[in-house]
Amino acid sequence: MNSWIVTGGLGCGKSAVVSLLGRVGLAGLTAFSCDQEAGRLMQDASIMARLEGIFGPSVIEQDPSSADGRRVSRSWLRRMIFSDPAQRHALEEMMHPRILEALEMERVRVREGGGELFLAEVPLHYEIGGIVTADRVIVVAASRAVQIRRLMELRELDQGTAERMLGSQWSVEAKVERADVVIWNDGDRAALEAQVLTLAKQLRPA
Image (cartoon, rainbow, N blue to C red):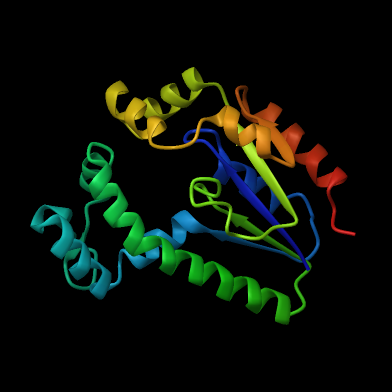
C-alpha cells in the first residue's frame, strides 16, 4: 500500500486537493483528514471537559443541535491559541497524540483491508517533526498575500489574526523546499484541477 501526505500552508487549499484526488479515479484510495478528526474529537464529552479545564468556561458555547446542548467554540479557541503560544502548546499536547493515533489506526485498517493508497491530510506535518511516515509528501502552496486574503474572506478573520496564524507555522517556502511534489494554488479552481489531474497521472501507485 502506498501512503501519501498532503500538507501545506493555511489557506492554500489542502482540503480541496484531497477532495479532487478522490475524484480523479485513483484506485483503492482512502483519505484521512487530521482537521476532521480534531473536529470529531472536540465533540467528545471527555475532551470538552479537558478543554474547559484548561481554557475555562468560555471555550464552551451553547448548541441546541447537539446532544447535550453544548459544543466547543472553535472561533473562541482559535483567537485564544493564536494570541498565546503557551495556550497553543497546551492544546497541541492534548490533541496531537490522539489525532496521530487515529491516523495510524486508519492506515492499518486500510492496509489490512487491501487498500492501495492511503492519503492523509496533515496540515502540521513539518511542524510536528515529520513523524508521519509517507511514500510521498505533497505540499499545497500559495503566496502569502493570497493566504491572507483567503483567511480573511473564507474564515472571516481580521488581517492581524490571519498574520498571527501564519506566523505560528512554518513558511510555505520552507515546506516547498522539503516536498516531493508541489501544487501551486494561487489561481482559480480550473488551474488547481488541472494540476491535480496531472499529479494523479504521474503519481499513480505502482
